[in-house]
Image (cartoon, rainbow, N blue to C red; front, side, top):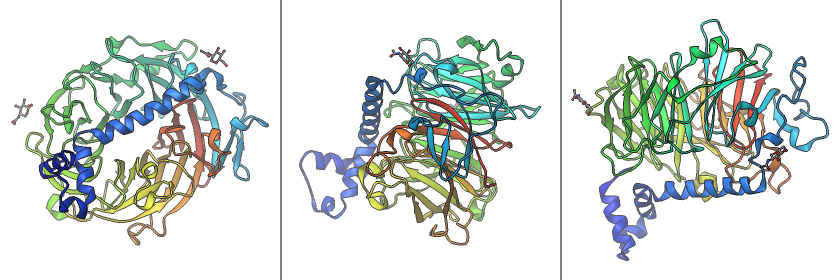
Length: 484
Ligand SMILES: *[C@@H]1O[C@H](CO)[C@@H](O)[C@H](O)[C@H]1NC(C)=O
Ligand SMILES: *[C@@H]1O[C@H](CO)[C@@H](O)[C@H](O)[C@H]1NC(C)=O
């Protein structure tokens, strides 16, 4: 994202010195708006306006959404002829779907939150095979177990750090038997919570942990806030990305946190070279680019570029490449299709539908495909255009085959991306399943809205196949595919 010439250029443009270069390349003007944080601020303000409107209309009062809408003993509500009728006759509990059944739902209120407003989520499988989830909300992280019957059982919660305000931006990633929790609220720090504490909880008596019940609270952030958290479990570190302010030493880039001793996390250094990083995936490189085999690589989603770093030495990281693409509006998040053989990745841009840019001009979400067989010259080779009108947000690839996506108002969508190695254009990529958690927008002209409603995130990596979907307004769903 960062480029001093572009900043100088944008400043010149702002001061009225519009030169020929700008006319030739309007994107150069845009680059300055990323660099300054203006685009990100604008996006956050638009989301805040949506959520304020949802609060005013009462939609964020999660107690109105009935938890466990089907009896505990009952099986799943099957997706039949394109709908799952969870509460027959109730439009807001009738979900459009394909190849995904409904198992359970619990509201944020019944997951112990006074504020609601769901965001991130993650999962942990205990040594005995039991599956636990963490569900982010404005005022903390809720813990629950998904039973073998697919029921969501609330166990307790960890409130936001002492002295920090509430914030919808709470991001969670797993590290061994811990959860690493960051927040956009200043003075929050990064909480490291030991999930084995859940093993002895009686669900009849959920536990609200004290903020001091964490294994550690890491306070190495410039202002205590971070936009997102990334984990490289193999290399035993976490990364705080997008930690404000942009003027700090690490420039809101990748800040590495050593987790070898989770009780005593340490700062390892940072990668400031491309400025603000919105999200990233850090992996030991395994793939065809022989120059980097065994190196520690981060794929950075940096607002207007895919930026690939070699972070093997945390103090002297290098940028291998920085590449933009047609339609770049807000490069948001992505995932390598196969961490064991890194040849392709899928990426979403959060603002291209809203902005009406590039392939997303008509407002249908675009999943961008990248050929990363050369880390120094990645190529954006094609895309998949969803037929469900809305905005895309977060995606993770399971078994090198299925891209599970949280696409706000259009819900959980699943693409089969296994054809990419044979056809990098993505023409053979297909949507194989979906569950639309947000019926509120179904009756609109396009059957959806370009807005920040519905699902923020999901966790698709459980062996059981249960997928947890965390929604902004309602609470958490448990669903499962029927086609695998
Ligand atoms: C939230 O919804 C519940 C259930 O419908 C209702 O009883 C309660 O009064 C609502 N709270 C507010 C603040 O509107
Ligand atoms: C790396 O950076 C950290 C944090 O700034 C510092 O404490 C450490 O001494 C540095 N290590 C090396 C090898 O330079």
